[in-house]
Image: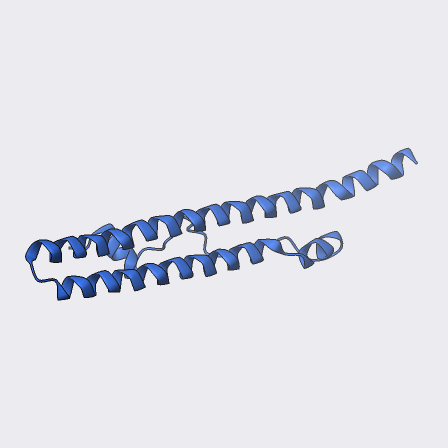
Length: 133
């Protein structure tokens, strides 16, 4: 029986809580076209993916090191200790990487909402100026 971590490690469960299949953006025409050029939302997501990959690669490397030490251990207690360290390393690294990814997704979503709100407010301000002017 697989534990939640093992299933996640093997790729059957996504690392983030976000279950959205794809993101939809407003049409890129008129005022939105200028704002969409500086699409920092996508940049934030790509940086988060790179950071997640880097953290997990480092954790897997350290996991391999601990497992190697466990294989070379002379007594049963040392072998168990090294295996436990290897398992814990992956668990903690996965949790840290998941938190980083979720924080980046939240920041990217917040940025996208702010840009959308700013794009909607700009035509309203222009219309108000024309009425008063």
